[in-house]
Image 1 (tube, rainbow, N blue to C red):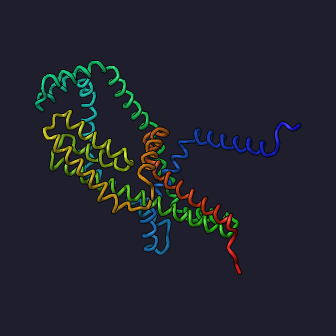
Image 2 (cartoon, helix red, strand yellow):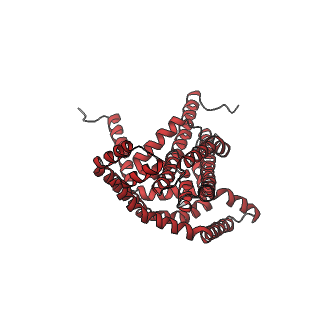
Image 3 (cartoon, helix red, strand yellow):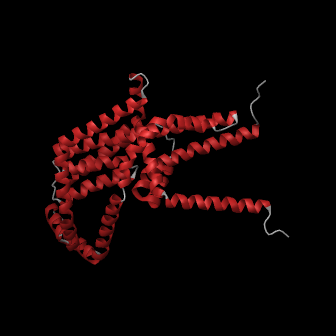
Length: 354
């Protein structure tokens, strides 16, 4: 009697290959993320590179060089205009953070804010008592958050490789896609793969450029209103930070808004209510005016699916997982529809050539 039949052996082999693939993904996650971000960066630059390539009579390498030079030049100009002030306010904000943490733990800052806002003594005592009873947990949570953020920044040196790797994808990405399509022997399946690759190219390019556009609009608008209209302390540090967080789906805007409100409240800003109203109005403008016009319906994902993907991505890979969750979900949707189309075609049979 055989210990394993052929089907059992095939199933065990498939499970083993799948387990080895998961082990490889876990071990090489940093290299995989580096290449993923390089691909995303290449998608961001594909549109200007393609346009410049037409102007430069088909020189792909020249177009890539010009786009990179313009990008570096733009960053230098922006940093020379506002970089010093942003860095100074950011440094002062980081120096102030430990003092605020100590004042929150002791209840001193709650007393100051409460007296300034006209809170009753009972409310102030209740909040201070709660903070003192849970002081150890609050300090532990704060320290854990700061430690994780610092460790994440330390481990993100690989992002420096992204622009360099993106050059190869910009230069040879089209040929890679063509090779993938041509590797499929069956003519009908080749058409399905070609359509799938085309949809993924359109989806990723449009999504990433839309997110960059929304983040850029948010950086300019929030920084302007915080510094010029509301005159919030540390506005030149808070505005770019809150605006840049728009690039992180769902979670980023909420974190940015809470960051602005928390710093304004802790620094004794006197118009927190008006600031809250502005942030709520801005959220509505972004979600119901800017985003539908810029993003459109390219992703075709239900809001509940997006929320699940963001939460799951955050659990798996933190902030990076949150950022990658939406493109991954949209890609899986395209792959799922391609698989369904292939199965339907296999049941019906190949199209007649007569």
